[in-house]
Amino acid sequence: MPAPNFTMPDVDGLFGRFGGRFVAETLMPLLLDLNTVWQAAKDDPSFWERFSYFSRHYIGRPSPLYLAERLTAALGGSRIYLKRDELNHTGSHKINNCVGQILIAQRMGKRRIIAETGAGQHGVATATVAARFGLQCIIYMGAKDIERQAPNVFRMRLLGAEVRPVTSGQGTLKDAMNEALRDWVSNVDDTYYLIGTVAGPHPYPEMVRTLQSIIGIEAREQVLEYEGRLPDLLVAAVGGGSNAIGLFHAFLDDADVAMIGVEAGGKGVETEEHCASLSRGTPGVLHGNRTYLLQDADGQIQEGHSISAGLDYPGVGPEHAWLKESGRVSYRSATDADALDAFQFLATEEGIIPALEPSHALAELIKIAPTMPTESITILNLCGRGDKDIFTVSSLIEGIRPT
Image (cartoon, rainbow, N blue to C red; front, side):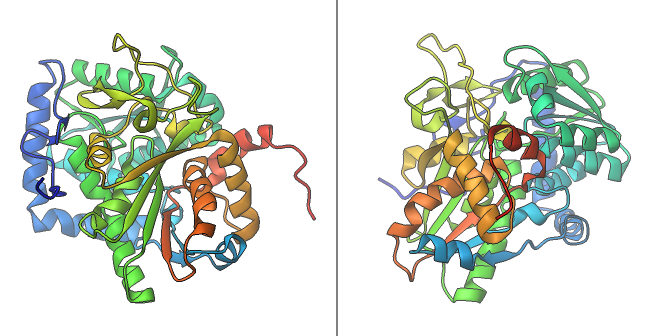
């Protein structure tokens, strides 16, 4: 068997048998045009110069790679570093991709930006860059997510975006993405769809991956500076999968670096209330790409569940589906209860309140770090801060008192 080609996708947007373009005919010319502009930008030094400028002076990159000494001591075993992308402007990794894509939208002459959001972090980041570049912005967000992510809804509106509630389905991320795609079909001339994760039709999975790979590029340089060698393990949460692939991609060719993606186990993967599509799903087509999905025997998409709005999606980016099948990355799951425990643990041990999304990754790390050698090195991508989740968490956790 030939070695996996980690520079994929191919010209058709395929990662092995995953990815591609499965869209209505009205969208195909738009996607082909977008791909032409993206491929040209990718090879244009001036595009990367502008991206680097905004990354440094607007986002605040590079984000720190922080040795979590108290967390390491509390768990024993592996030495733990946190890649602190929650310190970015807007509070998560989402802004990396949004800055890059808004520069693409400018190149295409688009004046109207649409996006979907679950946890609201992508919506906030999209509204932020739209405000910065003076563009109209419309965010589609599930009604359920609007309720549980009220702080981010306020931020989006404060930034000048129109937040459109989506009441179809369960009113979560999948449904918001459906509505955004419908809008795009109806407004093809002036509208740019700024997708927030490594899913959707080609070239989005490649484009978002490439823009988010700044996370892993920085982490690689930083750990070599601090430790003089590469890490033994990378850990990141996986919903659509952009923060995880952003960390993983720079290390994919390093066979000695293990990688674990952690999905939303909800109330348990043995139930039907989870969003662990790689662990419990099957290949199918959703939102313009072939990937692993939660679906029934007839191919009907099943509604998942997660305490985390950002992981509440019944699919995953196609590159993750391919990395699972190639065996390069191991995918596991953490339950709502595990994530809540991890959320509190990091707050009390390191004085850092994480978002519920990376709390899932931390939950897995809490289990495995004590089993690892003390000389080993682990990097966890802390992809978002927990401000947005405090109301959700406070309603579920009782008895928090000063000690």
